[in-house]
Image 1 (cartoon, rainbow, N blue to C red):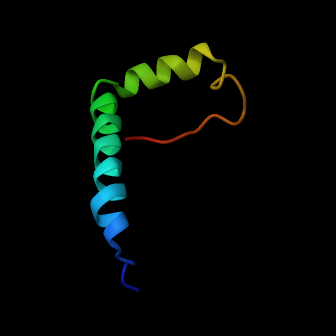
Image 2 (image 1 turned 180 degrees about the horizontal axis):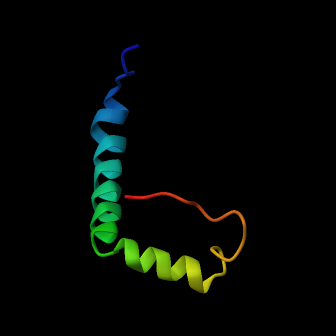
Length: 56
């Protein structure tokens, strides 16, 4: 199914979404998997039976 197109989306919404996406990706570039794991451990999310078991 093709995406809907409109001048509002093309000229106003899409540029703002691109700006926000770039900012989000730039923020993620500064975060490591180790930092995410440390944050999960500190918040207690890995102390129960719900912790994930996987390999990268």
